Length: 76
Image (cartoon, rainbow, N blue to C red; front, side):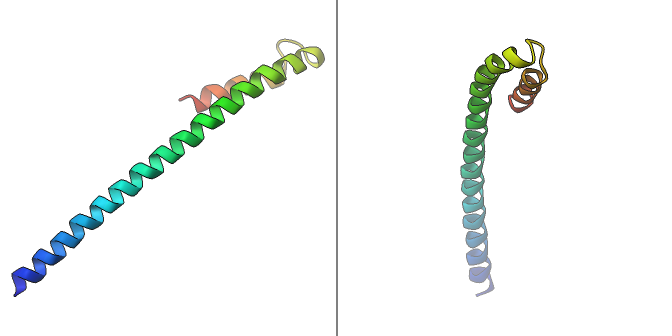
């Protein structure tokens, strides 16, 4: 009887670990998609704001430098 209880407990723990692994994979892909969309947004902002900031601040302006640093940091 004790062996049956241990077997059921072991099977339950294995199933629980499999579910946790699948949830971690789903979370990983959600976060990677979110980071990818943030990268796209920053690159689009970088393209538009550098043309606007070139008129007001100059080509070596603070906003274009800041956006390039942020985009490099997010790209890993």
